[in-house]
Image (cartoon, rainbow, N blue to C red; front, side, top):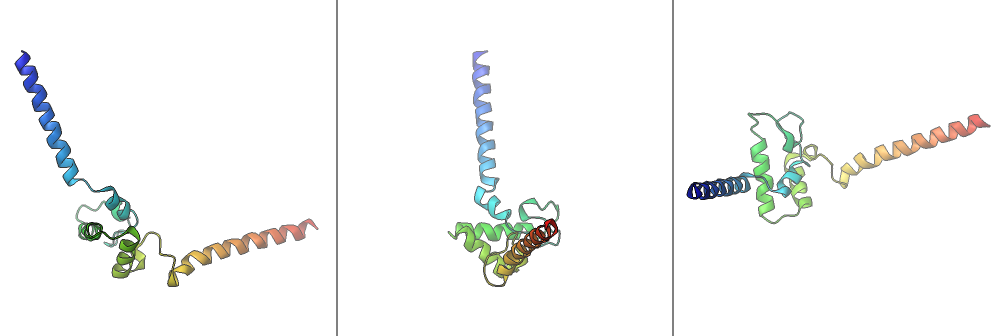
Length: 129
């Protein structure tokens, strides 16, 4: 019986080791997952690349491979996102870059919000008098 128990333990450890190696080789890196959450899938679904659930999505794989190639090439996250925005258009980025024309995407909403708060404050101040 002791031999069977030892054989079982060795077999179990071998299966566990193979499963962990398979997961490590097939699993996505944390950096790829992080970058995939910052880019939209451009298949037309409107989902974030990391969350695109289309079984037959033809763009998810190539986009992830493009990101992975850039990561393997030693590019920084910011440079990879700039490259994706340049190649596929700024609309592919979940958060647009803060430069050029995209600066308006950041400034206009904040300015409108501040003006609205100021107008509300002035209106309440006048009504209280």
